[in-house]
View 1 (tube, rainbow, N blue to C red):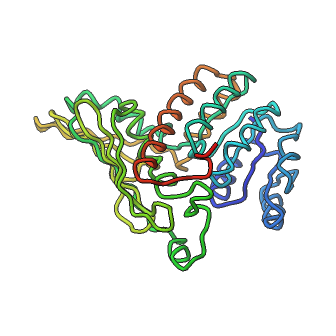
View 2: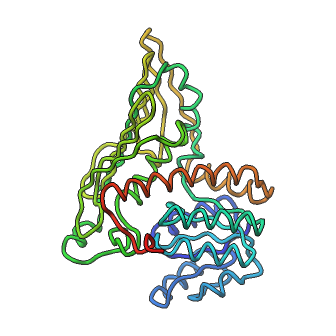
View 3: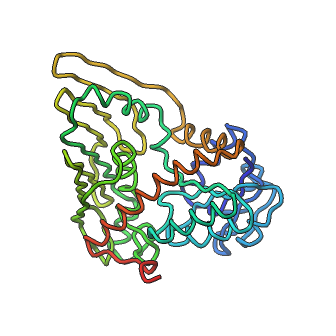
Length: 327
């Protein structure tokens, strides 16, 4: 896997040191004319051979086989589409797209072109999260599931003062559900599949959700996702069953440590140290792309489409509308 990176924001600054540590080559990076100085600085700091403010130039790079897209949510669909049609594999930061229709179109293009498409969601690759599935039978019949990922945003004050950044901009498919709730949705649906019912009650400011409570209905239990950017709370992922409970005392993008407690007094703890929280994800992505593992890609895309449908149903329930909904 040889990457070309679209974006210069916070997640890129987090990912680049890991890529260097994993010896994953970065052939090029792209920003906007406004971020040209940041592009140049990142090229210098991380030894990236090519910096550009033209996305067309980026996806034409002969040195890269994969484009990693880390731009505002509203740009994901069109940028991923162009990269796939240019013959590149694509990794898109969560959420994959703004709407289910956009996600389905990208899936179809991926299948047609034979290029792999992945949503970057750390949760799905973390060993401590994968252990939860192994422990599930011990909990008995699941009755309640709850995830809380509430993190006060440093941009919230500016947003309330009228300075709207992409993460709070409905025109750019922002909001707490899309930014943080997506991790809770993946946490729940990867374990239990698509829910029967979806309801979302949100704190709405200027047409965007700054926090909210999402309830997913399954035949035998309810799952609750709390995600907020207008307040903070300890991260928690909890599965309650008739024979015991499983708890991770961390948000759903970290999933650090697993504890099982049985009604019979039994207990089990598990933690696999992986260092950087994105390491398992990028190691898995590199393997799947290097091996052209289309079956694994199809499984991950199926999961992404389930999450996209939940996002869309939740937004519709709360009355949150994005420009992409009109397409």
